[in-house]
Length: 304
Image (cartoon, rainbow, N blue to C red; front, side):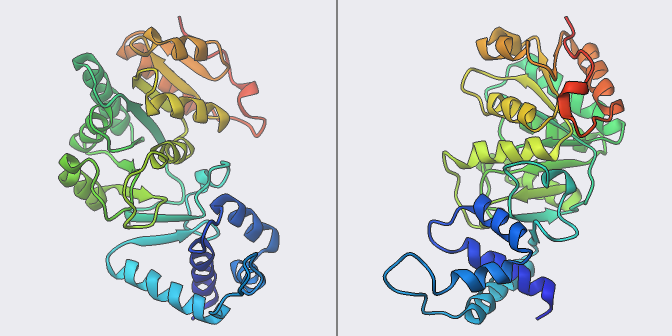
C-alpha cells in the first residue's frame, strides 16, 4: 500500500471511531502532518476502560478495503490532504475531512451557488432558471443542493444550457433524496459533479442539510438566494457564506423576510430588484478578486 493510500485509510479509520469530532480530527492531522501518526497515537490510548483490540495495521487494512469497495462502485474518495481536493473548501471552518464524489471533481471550479425554497413560487422558479442559464452560458458552474423547487430549477436550467452543475447533497452519495430527483441526480453525476461529506449510505438527517449548506457555500465564490422563508436552509447558507467571506445576493422576493432585511445591512450583501440587476451583481462579484483581508475590501454591495 503506497503512502497516499495509507494516509487516506488512516483518516477513514480515525473518522470511523465512535463519537469522533471530524473537524477536530482534521486539525489534529494538520498539526501532526500525518493521519497515520494520529491513528498510531490514538489506538490503545482511548478514554475507555479497555484499549483497542485491533492494531493500527488492522484498522488501516480494514479502511483500505472499505475505500476499495467504494471506488469499485464508482465513488471518488478524497481526503482533505489529497492534491485533487477542491481548493476552495480548504479555507472554511466546516471543511469536510473526507469528500465523496461521482463525476468530474476539479481542483479549482469557478462556481456560484443558486439556492432557495423547496416550495418555490412561479416567479422564483423563473428567476432561478434565468440566473442558472446565464451563468452556464458564461462558463460559470452552477452549484445547488438538489432539493425540490429552486435547487431543481437551477440544476435543470444549467444542464439544458449545456453548462456545468454541481450538486452538494445532504445524504450519502448512494442515496436519492428527494426520490423524485433520482434521474436528475444520476444525470448530474454523469455530466457534472455530485459531492457529499457523509458516509455513502448515510440517510438524511436534521443536521445533515445545514452541514451541506456550509459546504455548498464554501465551494462557491458567491451565493444567490432567490426565494427563502424564515426557517429556510438558504437563510443558513447566506449566514455561512458571509462567515466564509463570500458575497451574498438577495432578491426582492427574499426581502419580504425579516432575516433578509437584517442581512441587507451587512457588508458583502447585494440587494437586487429584477433579473437584470441580479445578473449585473453576479458579474460584479465574478470580476472582483477579494484579497486575503476578506470582505472589508469589497466595494459597496447594496444595490437599492
